[in-house]
Image (cartoon, rainbow, N blue to C red; front, side, top):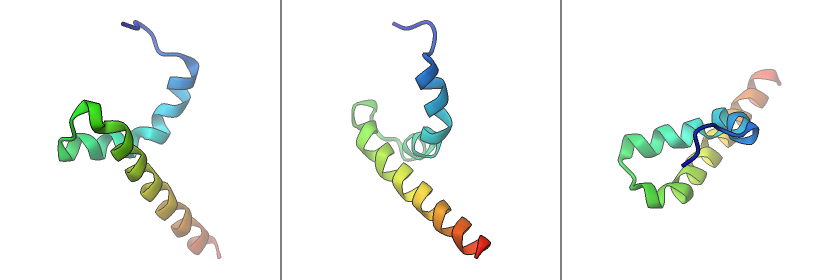
Length: 57
């Protein structure tokens, strides 16, 4: 078991947070979390990017 996080884990954590929170909210089992988290992160960051581009344009 790791007692400390690597630099990569620390940098990636904010970007993975939306998917992690969504998985916890819907109660996904830990062994199935990776794929579901990837789906939620893709949707979240894509929608956020579209909203930002729309707001700036």
